[in-house]
Picture 1 (tube, helix red, strand yellow):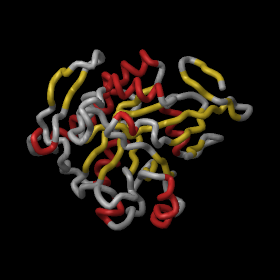
Picture 2 (cartoon, one colour):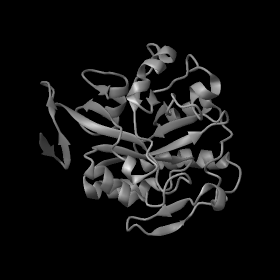
Picture 3 (tube, rainbow, N blue to C red):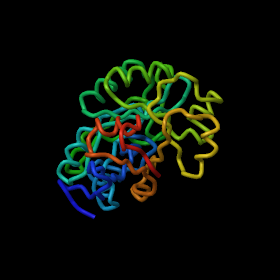
Length: 258
């Protein structure tokens, strides 16, 4: 094992391909269903302790904690990408991950424009915006747990328009997934990947996917102890967004394992 630029990697092949442990589905305290100690600071610290190389903060229908997490990642030597888990009109969860915070915020602007309702913290939980010092900056009053007035295809297209990756979240679960809500994965839906919540679900999901997008397995962490419990290993040259895209496309020697 070697350490370069703050990241731990293991060399593969003549092109210098390396292994990076990746979890692109982590909720912060901005998601009403996440625990309050899931601040960006504690998430990044925990991810580093668990040896993760690349993570994404993917809160429900919001990216307000992503900028803080990206800054903390740079300080801690771990790559953090800004993400979001969108709840579509069909109540299907789609995972969107971007290279830059401004892209995630542009997606957030579109989401906020088409998201109705006000959060009731007594029912759904607080929605906390935190800073790099682990302090509360404010509370989001929107109903982030709600469904956005955008269909599945529209969300996928918008994410791609903004330069992001779009994956179907936890498709093996009995709620808020493409399979549970629609009964199938629509042919022609331009997904970059399909997330399963456990490696044991691979065979079940392959019946629906066939030769479709690659499968990934992430933690969907809502508590600190869940971080590092599940992840996918990406074979890349460097821990950068363009390499993630190439791994999803299986270009060259790049691939995804779990």
